[in-house]
Image (cartoon, rainbow, N blue to C red; front, side, top):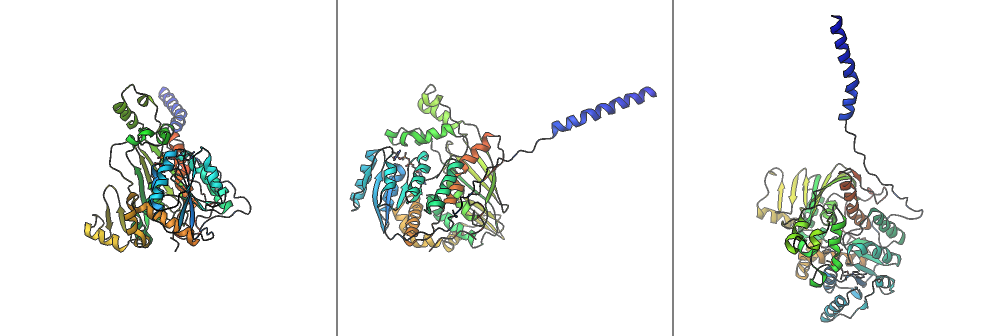
Length: 462
Ligand SMILES: NC(=O)c1ccc[n+]([C@@H]2O[C@H](COP(=O)([O-])OP(=O)(O)OC[C@H]3O[C@@H](n4cnc5c(N)ncnc54)[C@H](O)[C@@H]3O)[C@@H](O)[C@H]2O)c1
């Protein structure tokens, strides 16, 4: 009896000793959120929300970077009234010559030419320029934008405007200090379906928008591996970025239109994200197949996971899903999905609209077309037909240029401000931090420094 009692006592003592140890092993530590310090806004500096500058009746433009994108931008500008192309800058003299020929063929004056590696500085310093239109590769986006604003110029910069949080802050601070416009050229915000569905969201057709999705899914393997002399990117810059980064290198096409639907920094703000990348398979397999197992390209180390998925939570409790994939053999896709309490719209892989009380299925094609017509955005009504004729991703690029020039001519706030540029671009850095740290939550900086709730919704100035 006594023996039994002692045996039990020993078991209890052992359990009491081991249990806390066992529990402490089980207990998973809450992942810490990666947070950033918000740099203090210097005294006297104010936000540039709804920034209005002096009207510029004839906008004098200098183009820097005349590759695939820059050349097309100049071509579109030929169709705009009240603009003058005054300078062309590219390290590739052939690109300048080709663009001069385009101007000449269209009966336009020839532009000043700049071809030195650092000549973009001279272009920004020109007295007869109002707007710098920057279509260079990613590493030059921020330096040129900053220098342009310092020289008193407005700047339009290709996507993404910056690659690091630090550079996003530099853009914001420089725009606020110099009171110059810094607009990122996020053309996907101006596509026809995106604008109509934004209009639906703004007019309440979809109810409260709760969840949105966007993406950049575009098989770029052939272009990324193409040598510049065969029509590839300058110095194969894009391939090099695929070697350096693991996460979402190109977030803005998917993010821009859905952030507009959620009124980001116009009543809501992105708070934090988590991001996960698959491993890298596609680049190496493509390189082996195309250039051989022993080729230099097959042996290179590509950091970028094939598919990156990021989820963002907003202050008002909404969620955003963003994907990036440029290496899988699959159809082009930006998703563009808005899901609300009264309805649902989606652009890719198939266009569809579903509304209460029968939202279990998409509306028939004719009903969807009817709705798209009814909710056609006023800007598309104004310029959509001409945009389709001029082209540029089906017309959206022209609508973007048209709006940029229209607002500068009239001295109106631009549709996209420097905070949009910073918020949409900062995902490059934030997703990288999350992916490299086991998909840890990462705070999204508030680039408005507390002013995100001052504007009530996105408006297109008229
Ligand atoms: N918004 C869109 O739909 C869209 C589409 C394509 C490309 N882009 C963006 O446009 C930018 C350019 O892309 P691209 O396809 O034209 O690439 P690209 O390589 O064809 O063009 C880059 C150009 O920059 C020039 N350049 C390089 N260094 C220079 C310097 N120091 N000074 C002046 N010029 C210099 C190159 O010679 C080249 O002509 C990228 O940021 C890309 O992400 C956007």
